[in-house]
Image 1 (cartoon, rainbow, N blue to C red):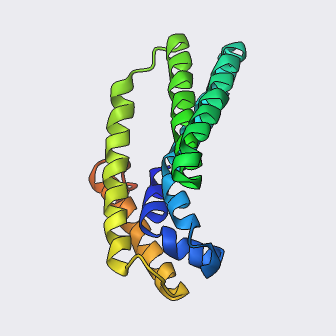
Image 2 (tube, rainbow, N blue to C red):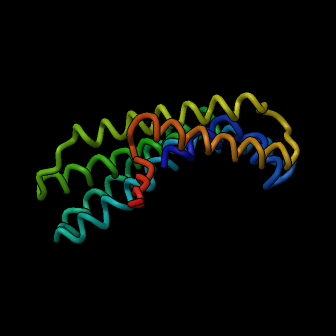
Image 3 (cartoon, helix red, strand yellow):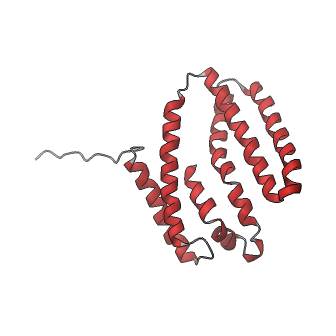
Length: 179
């Protein structure tokens, strides 16, 4: 999920220009503001299915209702004062509550140590920062498609290389063939 951070933050403008056209420049700030939601969405989906699997579907109902209520209240407060970006911020905040509540539900049923999760999150964040640096080097404004393709490829390589260096995964070892 954290591989989404770099393109959404650093390349929000090129993404909007390429996907929607120059008439949608107001969407750039909204896309950037929705970055936390994009990251949390993967975790929320996984945790909500896990809670169902653990027989905790009923406990999810109040969480879903609270999520909607938080989103509505924040939208009513933020949209009139800061515009559509306020709606994105409301969604981010509400979904954070959703994810944390589902993590809490799952943690109550399964002895889930948070230390390894936080360590993995820290390593993935470092990789996302490396990817941001690569994308930033290519620029943040209007970019030709070829630059987006090259920059995306190199950014993803930087992300994966950082994960490899930080020990998130290992390369397969070669087997020695007897001679």
